[in-house]
Image 1 (cartoon, rainbow, N blue to C red):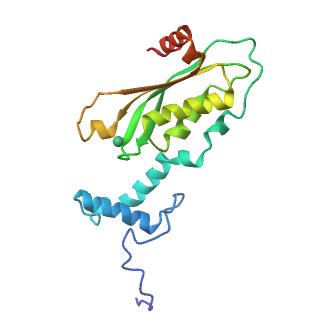
Image 2 (image 1 turned 45 degrees about the vertical axis):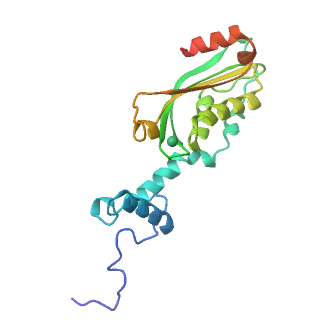
Length: 211
Ligand SMILES: [Zn+2]
């Protein structure tokens, strides 16, 4: 058996290629190199076998964690139903689980959100409220801004009598590092319209949410 003079491809190491496995997003070399640098900085060897494919995996995972950047959250509220059958009570989607990442440490924020509104002219499919949440959560965030953005988006696009958003979450940067306080949740809320101005209405929505 003889080889032709086709050198050059034999020594390519596992991370030396641009083309991704079938069906997977290609990851540019500089992105992979950045993650190798971080592995090295953390104290491990990015060339050891178990870590060879890690940079590409991490990069693809981050595209997924941050896929909200490719979405316009308001677009989820575009389809509205005017015929509400005289319904003029609170619409509430309770305890929606979500994951986000804090912009200070890029650590996970894991929690649940309750989103309510008091319809004026129209309603949206209930799952759309969760879509708005995820469109903002899948970005680098702080919990306060996430809460405010979700409330603002519903307030602006649905023009309801009131909006209430309450988010309860744990922060990986607190539970896994720093003061290391697992089990501590942070609660943030943003209220608009009736829920802000009328104490009875506010009490009602918060009690429906379980607060
Ligand atoms: Zn953080």
